[in-house]
Image (cartoon, rainbow, N blue to C red):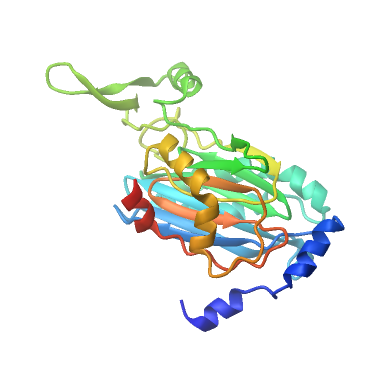
Length: 312
């Protein structure tokens, strides 16, 4: 990244004394600076990011701006991940009525996300492709974060006080009893892969198809019991942080949360003041770090994937 590109990303610097003064006066900040870093470990080339910082509820009105971050962890080909990356946001926005207030827009957003996921899946199936993708889709509007997900790409909130909460549901059959029951009630079968001699190996899968997930976009050859209906959660936060599930999940979350302050220092070009909360999102060997500092001029985070991998 050139010095000019870095300079353009930098928000105006505010003296530390001014920031502390605002904090002491409990000055409210309407919107955070949204900063992020991303990295990917190339495996099959089926995984994609979507990052848009300049979306607007009302075209041309900067006061209606919001940001979108998404991870698409594709499988059995790239077409589903690419299609979802290109179409999902438009399908979500088309499901929200025009000329409504911000509060009404935020209230309509969870239902619009469900409609957008379903519409994207239907449109993709019409093309006859059989690949699939997980999706974790995050919309940040002010201090409100709305997360919709299908599959096993996680999003975890690390809020002030060190309270950690999961904003997504894991749709891996191995981990989710309710999803196993739903699949079997819909006519599918759940079991492990049978090998020679009758032994069962590997994670639980749904049959026909052998998919390890119960929800995704695409996967048209698996069965109607694989659905695109996302889990949706909307919260208000002050900082935010997003990563991958290529590692042991428990190990990775503990590692990141323990090292988060060091990572913010290491991966940023400059940090003036650190706010005390953050969030973590997880998907197969993709890393996307997002931070919403309230009183800070933090510059683009450069997430060093090799550093993390060496320490696993």
